[in-house]
Amino acid sequence: MAAMYQGSCLCAAVSYELSATPKAVSHCHCSQCRKAHGAAFASYGSVPRNALRILGGATSIKTYASSETVLREFCAHCGSTLFWSRSQGEFADWVSIALGTLDTPFMPEKQKHVHIDSTAHWYTPAKLCPQVG
Image (cartoon, rainbow, N blue to C red):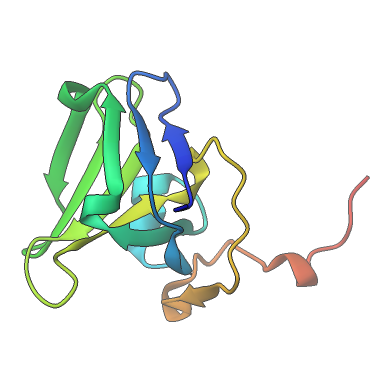
């Protein structure tokens, strides 16, 4: 039986399910991902496009072309970043899921940080931060 994961946006207008386990889990530090997430980095995992099924709110999903080949999708009501994908090229049949929108627990087998040369100047990796509490 295939893995099944469910997710939704902040306001729950959009809900989806994945019939495959996300692969290529990465925490992207590029400026576009930081701006899209409003955070130090964005965490994504990818699945084949046919493994993503929108359960509700498809008309609430808006698309923004952040570059010539990258489409970003978000909820028009609450602004939650949901997905990004390439409109052409080698991985055009895959979609990357914003992992923070998953409602089902998910633990990746491996993960990596990418575009660390673009890390926000104000961000200090957790292992270097003093403990508070």
